[in-house]
Length: 455
Image (tube, rainbow, N blue to C red; front, top):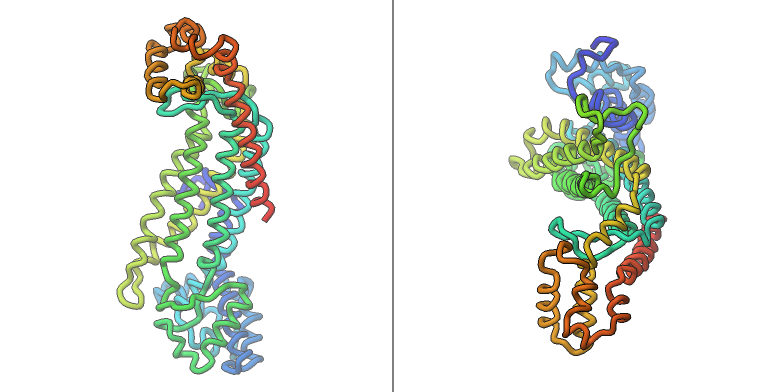
């Protein structure tokens, strides 16, 4: 690789993702975690009397990248064509006479799957922080706009009024549910194994359960209660499908921004640096929602990553290698991209340009049609059958806003005049009642969201 980065291949290396998160999956970090597992195993075996204490301590001292260099492991692997065998031979060299005890009783998957659990533990901690940050940004927007009137839309058409704050509260609650899912699944996800070739622990003899317990205690991980040669792949499948859920929420939120930023709606806009940022190379006026579009694009890829781990659950007997290659790609890419999306969404919503006047105009421009539900219910309460009230309002709103304000048409209708006074009609058609309800609902939702965030 040249210093200018021109030889970089994967866009994750230079375009997407944060360096902090990419480093979790660097080759150096993965070597450190594998060595940490080997050291923890040796110390656990010494604890139960399977390995001499001085040998275990020598292995522990040697199990660092300073003593076991990545280039040495690579050189051995070129000959052995086996990554963990290369690691153990390099560690044995570094440990000197104690090297005879390296990897004692273990199989490769004991090391790789347990190291993977350590990797996932770091990734999960970052994702949890990302979800909290995004939820906090959405809570702040929801509180600020709890009573900001906005047209609620269904099927892309005007429905009834809501508040922009309620829309943000709905999003915050969804993000918090993802955090709850993550907290729940981490118990099943963050597990390793030290139970040998087919999971029975026979290679560790009568002390097998003690070896595994002591190793996992040192690593602060759980243990798979019933592994084969592998930790159960249902665990990874659950996690990557969780990431797909988060990705779908990310796309939902980014799509909402994109739609509300459309010229004909123009109620919100992404943050945009008017001085330096360029929207188009030819259309100088453009202020495109590029970050939201970026989130949308990446979300579609993350959902695709959910499929291979489901297929990896199907192994030949106690294990094969059909999962190995794609997991090396899927797991880091999915985590890096979800972190990237959540970070971008937090930036988008933290700097969101909310045009409250445009929102109010949209409510008014409908000619009051957004309040047909309120009028229908009022007419029903006054004695008209609900289906008759519905049909009456369907007739009154034919032609949409082009036929004039709903209040004007309703006042001219004999049935409405018989049942409602002009003052009652004005009150019923005032969007304030719907917005007030949305604001109160927002407050109630935020109480629950903030309670969950405090956990």
